[in-house]
Length: 185
Image (cartoon, rainbow, N blue to C red; front, top):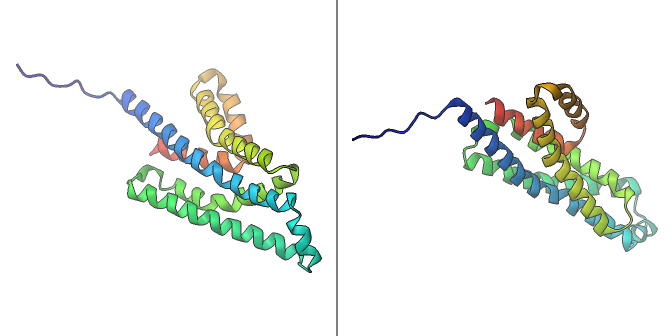
């Protein structure tokens, strides 16, 4: 008696690909949401201890201060992103190569957004908490909602509206590119 397995259906293959895409986005989102929290923590650390005031009193140009802080934070984040891209290549995730372009450009959008949002907070821990929360919502929650809405025929229009309006958020744009590459390759 010889037994052979049943052929794997296309529906099962599609479902497995969607599940692996969401799992990959979850891992990337958790790691990358900590980077802006670190950046905003450094900004508010200086603000809480009046370190910037001491430097300004000593003759520091404010434009140079903000420019070099922004530049240095982008370079630090870009180093981490390049390590993340190299792990994509090491594991041979060829479906996501086009989303790496968005991943490499991500620091140029999220770091200025983080620097601008630092003015909304007065305490370091609240800024870090809300920055992590905003990034996780943008990278995990909104993409799942949009994907669910787009697959349901009755709510496709609502999903398209949420998608269109959320593309302005840097975390959502990154996860959207990964979902697009993961589902369409």
